[in-house]
Length: 313
Image (cartoon, rainbow, N blue to C red; front, side, top):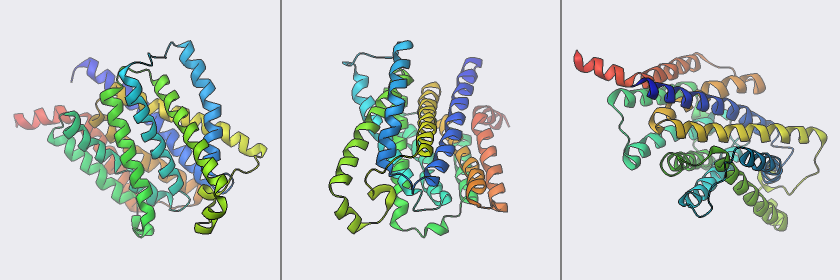
């Protein structure tokens, strides 16, 4: 790997690590405030705060693109993949433990790797494959999915994982020259439109929905907003903007198969945060899983050098 390739990879890793850390904060916040505001209202208000900032930023940095370009089609598809990812994952958090939801969601790097090999045609050597499976083994050590009982609710974060992997591959293959700011703007416009439509449906048919489920986070119409929740809205808007920008920049910087491995750092980060916020005490298996994930990252970064050294032996 050349010096330039190393620099590009390091930049991609920095971007994905920032995105993963902020995504962990957002997950904890969503679970903490899920009984105070429905997800549709939260999505609309958060988008209304983020979109003006993104428009100004796009103007300032000349990040708009020709609306007749091929990117618009793929950018819109990517945006709605991100909408599906967010709604299914965050809607699952109040229903499942953080550990169960994170486990199901974090099949996404495996899906991304498979897509990058069979759809994109990226090459992954045996050391890289070993690193990915080691990371998955670390995931199993960290997270105990037995509390999810494998009920149908676990399908929500699994669907989220598939949607995110599709968005990642689209970013890498169809949106490499698109400005991350504009990509994020499209995503938040999709959030706003989806949130408005869902809010109208829930408001119109709230009685029928409540007869079917009493799940407040999804079934409740809009509620009055307190001063505290406005602060939460601003915080979530900042988290959401940072996360989307980080992911977009990461997958534009480096191959998906190299970046995906670092997304596993979400697991130890969110485990620690869940312990702090909800009292989930990490076990020995958690520590061992973290070590496995760190080792898998090392193998991924050095897979080319290790493969060459193995061939010389």
